[in-house]
Length: 338
Image (tube, rainbow, N blue to C red):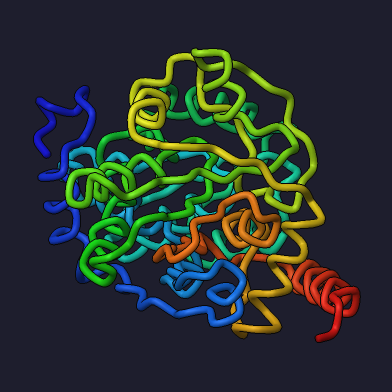
C-alpha cells in the first residue's frame, strides 16, 4: 500500500499484500473444531485461536504490517501508540525485532501482566489517566513533542489490512464457511476480516460481538455516527475505548460490511473463558472469548452452518482464567442430565 493511498480504505489487494509482508513475522494459526459447540448449534463450529499467536493476540498482524510499511526515516525517529494491552505488546515485539524505539501509552487501569509484557520487549510504557482515551491523548502530545511516528491501534489502513489476513486464512481453510463471529471494539479486526471474506466469499455472514458494558462501536452504529461513551469495568477489558470522533476508516467499514452486532453479558464471557480452558485447554481473555459467549447465549443460530469463531487473544491474569473455569463448571452442574 503506497503512502499516497494511505487516506483510502484498504482493499482486498492490500490485505493480500499484507499477507505476504507479515508471513515471516506471524503464526498462521490452525483451526480447532469444537465438537461440543458443533453439537449445540447443529452445524460445525471451528475456533481460530489467535490466542496462540506470537504475543498472545491477533494484534501482531496489523502492527507488523504497519511498522514494516514505515520509511527508514520514520523508524529512526521512533514510534508511539496507545493501547489497552495487546496492540502495545505487538508494537513492542515488532519494534524490538527491527531495532526501533517504541513508546506505549496506557491507562492506569491496564492489568500489570499486560504492562510487564510490554516492558519485557524493551518498549517504554507511559501510564496516563483512567481511560484509553486519556492514554491516547498523551500519545498524540508525545508524538508531536518528540517527533515520534504515531501508530493507531485500529483506525489505519495498514493495521486493518494486517488484521484482515485472518479472513484470508479462514477463506482458504473453510471453503464452506457461512458465519464468522469476531470480537468488536474499535473495529480494526472485524473491518479487515469482513473485507477479506466479503471479497472472497460474499455470502459469508460476519457477526461482531461486544460486551454489554459500554460497547462503543455498537452504540456508535446505533447513533449513526461515532459517539463517546464512558468506560466501564468488564472482563472484556481488551475491548474498551472509544472509536474516535474523527474515525476515518473502521466505523464506515463496519457499517458497510458487518451483518449484525450482538452483545454478551459478563456472566456469559466468564463461562466462555471457562469453556475455552476446560474443554479446549486454551487460555482466552474475556475480550477474546466474546464470540464463544454469543454461541453459549444462543444469540447466533444457524443450523447446519459452518461457523468460525475468532479467539482474538489470550493475555489474561491467571485468577481471571480460574474465575472462568469456575463459572463454566457451575454452568455444567446446572445442565439437565440426560
